[in-house]
Length: 424
Image (tube, rainbow, N blue to C red; front, side):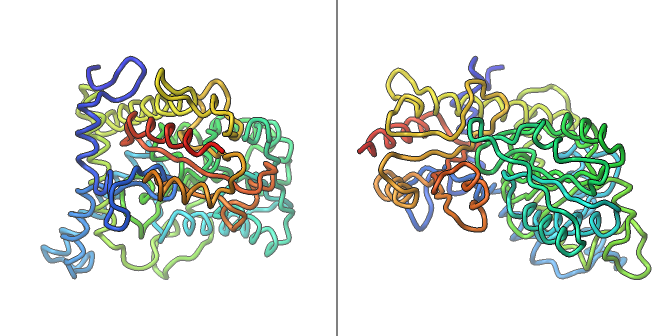
């Protein structure tokens, strides 16, 4: 369509319309002009989200009080839940809110490991600490073996066979990412779950989709995971809430609940309706994007179309970063740059990756990108968030670039030019 070029990138006119819907798209009050390539740390925020938050946070009423204001905020909560379902393709199960996706995953992992028999829990070296920390903690507290599938240094992925080798008939839980927040590797969730359940048919599975959800297509009904969690603040919304879809069998397991509530209730306390409202206007935005690529008025159809278009744009950006243009050398052509395990076929990659500059530690590199070129990246160091994958890769540290669909080819070219200038 006219909104997308042959290589899959958004047209310049449509990209300008997209960028106009975000705050601080090319500057912020603390740095001035800058290019934001740190979406994995938190995406840019939609203007409509902040406007909605300011308006809705002022309303003091509580849900289910049988007055007009109460009815109004109850409608927002119900709509927010429905829009989570639209985003995830969820027709069954429950949607649980939490302070963050991490909290939602801790709750789900706790419930599974304390109620389901088994002698081991399986995860991988590529996980975020929300999964690594939770699986490790509950393995220790329940006396289960903590099995961690090894990362491949060559591909910067955890091969499916390596995951499956750790699963057996006594596995209580398998927990892994949909897309890596470090290397951008996308896991084939459906295949992993199907193959793991050939080993143990009733295996419980949790998927961390925090990094994948903003960029890729999602259909939780097709995957069959018992828990699938994401964080709205990395998907153009705000901090303060996380969501997870959970299966009907997980929803009914004994868990923290309020007296008198149904057994499948996972809402603790009074929902903050403004957070649900913020999520709904985020879904409105994604449907607006999708409406340029489908004639359907159905919000789920529009969501699917938007994710396909976003993935194509992101793939085009990643190709440009790696292979460059006639004017700018790509990272794979710059001799002082080492990129972590990037395959030739980037279909199964998010536009997220680690790299190092020769003779420069990541903190210095990040600082120079920021101060000399106005480019915002992230340094991955041996801390709670990156030590396990860095150890597995054998890297002391790394710079992470994480782009988003609002990033432009011109911003990528400026990054490539800056990287070339940092040689030596």
